[in-house]
Image (tube, rainbow, N blue to C red; front, side, top):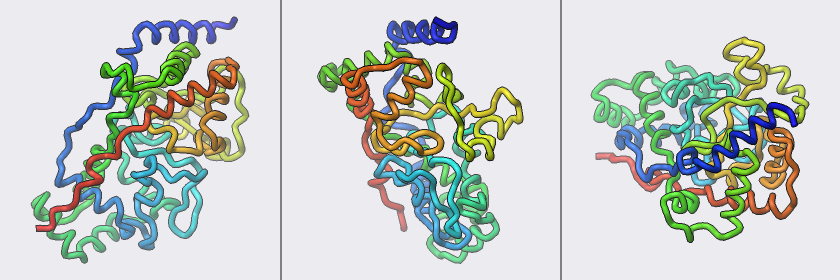
Length: 318
């Protein structure tokens, strides 16, 4: 048994003993400025934030269906295809950094990236501001909420406030963590125990059950990165240019995981059961029976929470 595997086992034993501290429920509410968030919501669905008025943030992030777009690579302006699988924006506020490579420290820092990325929305703030100023309702809302004209800073702030509000509390697993032992079936409870016992929670922990460290695919079993991965220097290396950061990516959160297929940074895995087998093989070097894989999948499906409450709110147009 090599040292890495021993370490993973040690971590898994620790997690089993202290799981209540390592995995915590999503809070039922989160603080944000409601009026700014509602303005951000309006912007999130507005295609005028893109260069050619064809792409909105919501095209690649379908809030009611997992917060991603359920395709391998998203399409941006001029029909251009992206190079990474689009991550969910749901519960992103709880991640320790934003973007798969951690190139944004928080939601406010992240906002400008898809707006100005030439493959995604391809816009400039100058053009976005001109379009929004030509809309009487936007001019009224920005003046009312920010007491100033439309500018880059308040556009970013409104969008980040909306994304802050995109939490999905009250999953059955959260109910279980809060003390309702009947919230999960016996198979689901056993799936959770297998999840811990097999070392999954060594990387997938915290409120998002992920999203709080960087890791590479292929800890115990070597993973062959495809040509797209190599060409674009996937991971932290693209940010730090340090060789030890090559192919390190942010561990994805598992919240609402049943809704966010396909999986991996390259969108190469379509089924959740296949994803579980893949991770057990490459990350912890363990092979499990179909029955146990099924139980882990059942557990993962208990992580689906409520639709964010802000989706039920409407802008105050008075």
